[in-house]
Amino acid sequence: MADRVTVGFDPGTARLGFGVLRGEDPVEAIDFGVLETASTISMPERLRLLYEGVRDILYRYAPDDCAVERLFFARNVTTALSVGQARGVVLLAVAQAGLTVIEYTPAEIKQAVSGWGKADKSQMQEMVRLLLSLDEAPYPDDAADALAVALCHVQTARFQRAIDGQ
Image 1 (cartoon, rainbow, N blue to C red):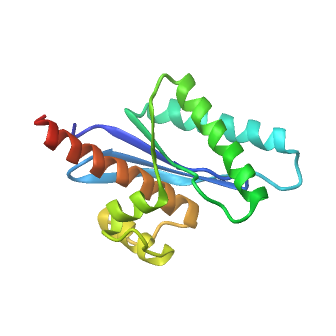
Image 2 (cartoon, rainbow, N blue to C red; image 1 turned 90 degrees about the vertical axis):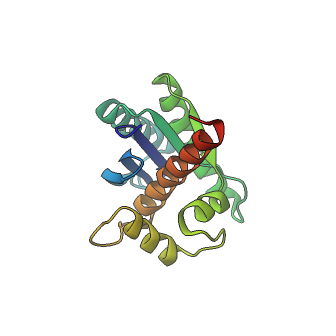
């Protein structure tokens, strides 16, 4: 399990965050960042660009596990639809790569990473920085969020294996 690769995604159409981790104890960040699309291009083109970017990440790192933040509530319907489309692109690319997607709610991610399900952005960024022994907090927020999604999965999977006696 030490060399297991986990990728986490934080969906969005303007910026889709990704974080790639190796191992579980210790766990190390091997890459993170965002896939960006310009608001001046059409939504179908933006989704195509995101799909190709996600596919490239999956090809480059050949992850064992893929985790994505689950959208469960949004105050702005337009934003929710946009994020939902980006999630669909991620889910499609992961499924085409033959991988299973594990989904976590924002509260589950916050609880797993910070110990508090209502942690704010700055608390989460600092916990990600500490847990991954980074010199500075990951930037932008979308990249930090994606690393948090991946960390949530690493910790949750390790706990589940312990319960299962593996």
